[in-house]
Length: 371
Image (tube, rainbow, N blue to C red; front, side, top):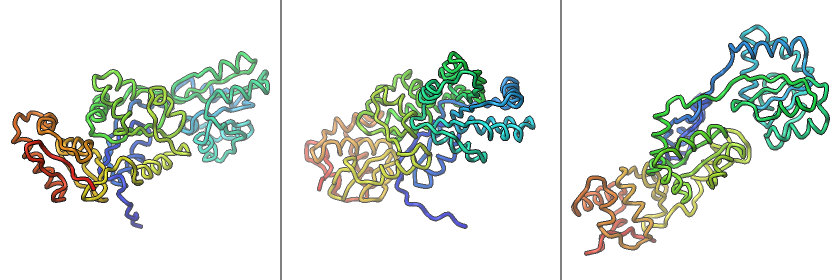
């Protein structure tokens, strides 16, 4: 069956995907909507399928079954079952889990539990370990054996709090976060975000968001990135409230879907770029929105060079006022004469395909004709 054509609502948008896991799934979905995707994972996921400590902890639970199992991440729970299967323990582990009280830290953990044919007894609303700790400590965990599947960032205090309260805690480190698999791609994505070659940076985990932002902050171009986030020229998109926290701490207001799912994140981006907003200016040739790949003019994408795009940005920012040739010349790298501006404007006019949209103001410069 052929896949139905999708509206290219993201045409002209370049989106940086900072995830390692499921990055190609997310990227493919965005590309089907017309986006250009740059992969720049800020962290790598290192599985522990052959880890002796994980196997020993799993075998202990088979001998001494847990009363409670806390599942903190969907990916971690699935990886745990995969590791158990690799050692021939999956069937016994599922039988043990079926008899335990299963606590899911959020919808992704719940989904993984259900995918394994199990039923979670409780799903947190806040997607935080703190909520789990508060409830279990209030109930009184003394004497209970509690297995805690740790997330990639490591311990967050939950298992320690439970142990202090008298629980027999079995921590399960299934995977951990490692360094960026391609530091050059990460650095390149930051430079592109600073200079206007990126429209969106998409984040799917809090550790990944923190890592990408920290790497960008260490570069000279961070000021440009922060400025573009603040102006709305660069959009941050986070899959959920937890993922958004490193952004919010830096004063960056991200797009956040109602549900913490990749599909919901994609729909949020489609709604954002598919809805006419103040990003568009009303020109004599129709509404125009400038994206990294060109100008969306009256609903059609007109591809532009980097120089043409930046000239158009400046003209649009003046809303019909004349822009001096010297200002326009400053946007053209290696150009030194007014003739270079004339050539660049001529090419911009040709690319836009809208006669008279960029007009000449005699002895002053050029302007964008507004409606």
